[in-house]
Image 1 (cartoon, rainbow over the protein chains, first blue to last red):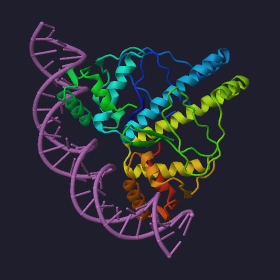
Image 2: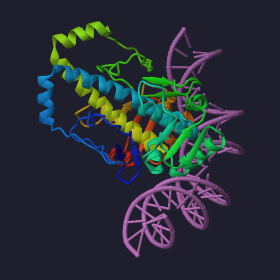
Image 3: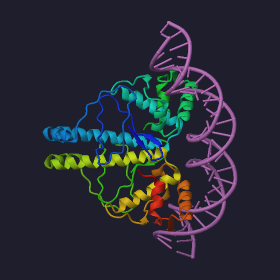
Image 4: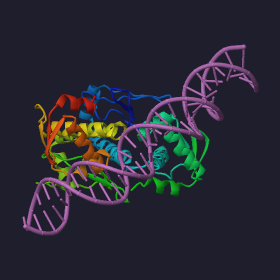
Length: 168
Length: 168
DNA sequence: CGGGACCTTGACTATCCTCAACTTTTGTGG
DNA sequence: CCACAAAAGTTGAGGATAGTCAAGGTCCCG
């Protein structure tokens, strides 16, 4: 999910995972767009159809509200990352978050598949491609990660990585 | 509304205005706190009471959902600010946003009252106090602002300021 | 009128960005 | 299965923006 400035600067707001509901921030001018980094199956729903479903199944509205609250909490976590964390902390936070998101409610995976290119990670973390690359290299040299290929990352020391991420 | 890292780094997530509903991101561990910068009237509502009201007035839920969507859009705007804008653009965006927020749906005010200290603005914009101060001075020297007292700012050239803010 | 909080300004520093070259990976056709 | 080209990623040198540290000024409040 990306947002653009007129001059082309780009901010990735998040990476949608399988099963995720998109378009929650349903406003008139929804100035956010979505790009696929992998083949996608998409179930599309007109605004009218959604209204109808909400009317038919009132519990849906409760679910939407909870989803919105979750999204909001994630956005707030991202704001402190973008506003106050160092490059090293941002990359660590991203890896920890991605690991948790890929298998929620179970011990997080240590073998991570990163389907998005470095540029997307950079725009997600408010950094440049080069800084992301350098920071990953540094974490590898420090023995926290193994990076067999650019899109495959193994977390060797989850606890230390989480400590760097300074998740509350 | 502030969020803290363990070592004390602080991110201001937003400034609540009169009439604003707080606590939308109602999660178990709601790791956000609120500080008052001015005297406040607060109407407090237990979770149970809110549940009751939602049951009694289903339209409330719709309203909450719309409010959440609004909050989400604002958070996304803030993310691109924190991730991709320069100090000058951040300060300009803050002033434009504050002006719009103080009188929604009418021509924005040019006389701004900023009740919060510079430190809060800095933590809101992901900058330091010194950078906020220097940037405001620079905007004043450039003829875009007048700053009779630190908490009173007059926007002299709204169009130019908005252009710097690069709001989409 | 005095003290403390807040703000501004300056000099210097560090982190991250920019620009550039080079390397690795990936995907396609022979 | 291999060769090749394009895309993606890494690394290095140098520079700019914002941060840090420090001093001094201003405003507010009792």
